[in-house]
Amino acid sequence: MSETEQIINVIEKFFEIGKTKNLASLREIQLDDPNFSSFSDVPPYELQDYSTTLVLEELRFVSISDYDYEITNPKISIFGDCAVVAFELMQKGMLIDNKAYTGEHIIIHGRGTFVLIKKPTWKIVHIHLSKIKD
Image (tube, rainbow, N blue to C red; front, top):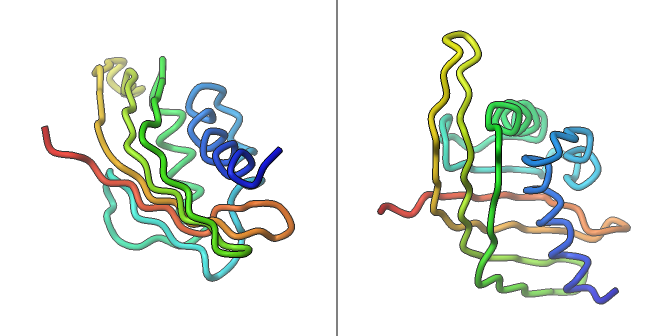
């Protein structure tokens, strides 16, 4: 498998967690390191560290049923053992409110930039997701 294929597989595995709800995969594909950081397209909008990011990602993925996504126009740039992946993203599903037993259908059009480092396999070290205003 080429470096480019390995990298896109990591990105796809990240979003597949929304479908499979296999939250343990988040720890496999993200670098547990003080240098890890993330920005999300949902609150809180502050820069997050590794452990806070994991908690928020787990909450997000379990709160959306019938989750689906589509990555379009990916651009993968590899610089030795570092890679930058920029892409457009469509996410949809049913946002579940377990307290009120209600749901809201959501569609999020956005874009993402992921930075990965090879240690020894490709791991996510930075995530930036942002919504595109409709």
